[in-house]
Image (cartoon, rainbow, N blue to C red; front, top):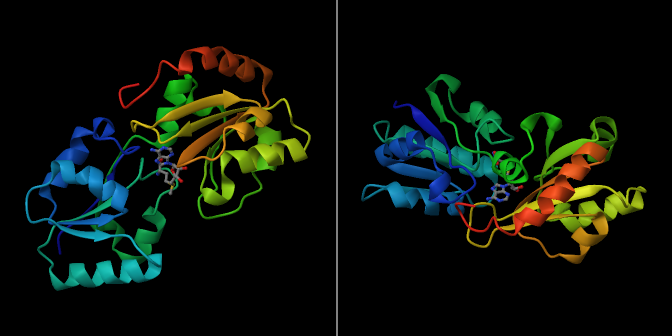
Amino acid sequence: MKNIYVIGMGPGHPDYLLPAAKQALKQCDLLAGGSRLIETGENFLTENVKKFPLKGQLKAWCHQLQDKIQQDPEMQTGILLSGDPGCHSLVPVLHRYFDPNALILVPGISSIQLFLSHLQLPWTNGPVISLHGRRHQWMDVLRHHLFINLLTDSGSSPDMLAQQLLDNGYPDAVMAVGENLSYNNQRLLIGTPEEILQQAPYQMNVVVISLDPGIQQQLQHRKMALHTLAGPAG
Ligand SMILES: C[S@@+](CC[C@H](N)C(=O)[O-])C[C@H]1O[C@@H](n2cnc3c(N)ncnc32)[C@H](O)[C@@H]1O
């Protein structure tokens, strides 16, 4: 059986895809993963590539992918993951279905990484927590670290997080939202929970929250420049 590429697709726009990822994509006969990522990958494909979009239950999809690979062991498979495979990705799930030594991980630029670079903040201010498909006691972590980075979903949207901050007595927290990062409809916002509530609804996004006065000041300063960062190269 051939090795399987697990390709970090970055935030989504092809400009943020690493050359190593493009190289791996070019070799693939089958692309498996979210439709949004397959769409990005299609920019680099040879003809006659099969696609297996992630739909329905993850478990059933993994079983079907296993079957496809077993039926055609010479086929080069690429599993496309958003951002970086090392940041809250499906890799631990893939380890249950495929031999870990058969997986070749190709890194990508994480959505958090891109957003922090727009904010001109380092990775090391606080932990990266995923609320994607799960609940988490993130408020406790925020109280402890004073700064957190959050991957969200529709059940943990910025306005919901803002409301939780207000309900817990943090009206002066500073939040930043990176929506549709790298795409033409990218939106970058910095504000208090009240201001973030007013900008709802939100599409795909990441959020950072700070209770640290020094970082809050940096964010407020950065707010003035954010409107100049529009589009993929921004
Ligand atoms: C399953 S997590 C995967 C995170 C990914 N491994 C990474 O490094 O960015 C999916 C979440 O990443 C965030 N995300 C991914 N791409 C994004 C983008 N282009 N803009 C904003 N958020 C994004 C969203 O919070 C989304 O719900």
